[in-house]
Image (cartoon, rainbow, N blue to C red):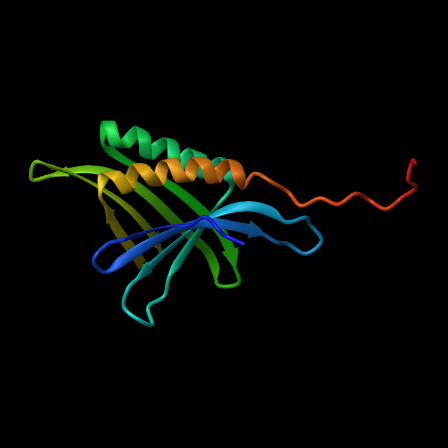
Length: 151
């Protein structure tokens, strides 16, 4: 089976965007979109951000909007762990420095952060890829309940 995946590499970091699934005991599986940020040095931890399909679509929309207008959009996830609340922030950004436009994806969780600059073409391709992936990952595994059949 082939799995769609987009990986954007920078000098020392990268981000991978791919389909994912949400699995919980007693509940049907659901489609998701995962962002995996990593450093190219071996042994370094990665940070995952798993988005619902409609949220991935919103990231796509923001990338396209920011490419033209500039600025930054942040998507925040909070979840409770035995150690307390964990907050993860995914950022997409279009900026201008020294007269040149730049684009980046970044993630922050606690003190850890990873920034991945991207060329304009890859930034916009990520938007289109997320748009398509958000639709293809809009699914829930469902099985017909057992019962009398009507034949």
